[in-house]
Image (cartoon, rainbow, N blue to C red):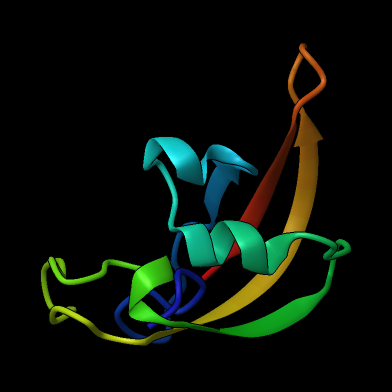
Length: 91
């Protein structure tokens, strides 16, 4: 499932986050690490081990200790007023 496809083929909402914010739990560590160095228009398949994803707790339909795959496309990079980059990604 991707945010581009949503639950079907109709489209979804891109997911945006502040790069480097995985330490405070707002984004998966594997996603945070995986998008570093990407350029706009770039695509990556991230295979994220449990310790960089949801670990032993799991979440909703993702079972505990699951390795997850994230299909990511970088759509844009935005700067906030304080100079920290915000990457808007699909995944």
